[in-house]
Image (cartoon, rainbow, N blue to C red; front, top):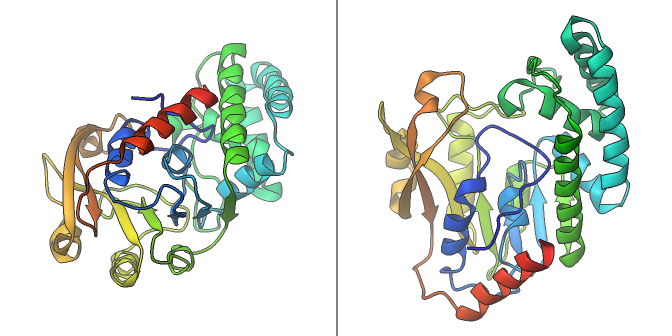
Length: 305
C-alpha cells in the first residue's frame, strides 16, 4: 500500500490507519476517476488529502480554525518556513517559561481565543493533552497543557513542517474548495457521479466536536444522505466490548455496511481505550476495482513522498 500522508493537524480519532480501508471501498464504488470529492466533516483532512479521486475536492467543516488553517496553506501564507520560524520561537519561550511552560501555554491559549491565529492553533493542538481538540460553548480552546519535556524539539518541528509541505503539494495537484459551513450545506452540493465521504462525531462515544453532536444531528445527516443523488461512504462505529451503536439499528442498517476492528489509544474514558469495531456505511453496490485507479493512486503518493 502507498504511504498515507499525515496532515499537520492532530485530533483524537484521526483516521490515519483506516485510510487504506476507506480508499479500497472508494475504489469499489464505480465512480469516475475524475469525480468530485465531497467531504462535509473535514476534520484533520487525513482522508480527503489521501483520497484517490482527481476531481474537485469540496470540503467543509463547522470548525472555522481548521478551514482557516488550510486556506492559509492554499493561499501560500502558511509555509514550512513560516511555521518553522514560529515553532522555533515558541519552543524557546516555552522552555524559558515559568511553571514548566504552563505560563506560556496559557498566554498562547488566551491569545488564540482572542485572535484565532492558525499558528497558535497548531501550537495548541501539539502542546495540549493527548492530541485532543476541544472547545467550550463559547468557542474557546478547552484542552489542558501536556507537560512533556522538550515538547517542540527540532526534529518534531521538522516533522510538522514536512507535513505542511506534503499538504501544500497535494492542494496544488488538485482543485480544492475549503468552506466553514454546516455539513448539510456541503452535502446538498453533491450531484450524481460525485462521491461523498462523511466522518461525523460518533454519537455515544464521548468524542468532542466544535459545536457538539446530538441524535438530532444524526437524524439530519441520515436524511441528507438518504436523499442525495451521489454515492456516499459514512464512517461510524459498530460496537465495542461494552455496547453496540444504537444509531446503526435505528437508521444506518438499511444501507450496506462493512466492518473492521480498530484500536483507539486516546480517550479519557476507559471504554474509549479498547478495541472498537469500525463501520463504513455506503449506498452503492460493490464493483471490481479498476486497475488504473490503483496504479494512479500509487503514482500520486510516490510523487508526494
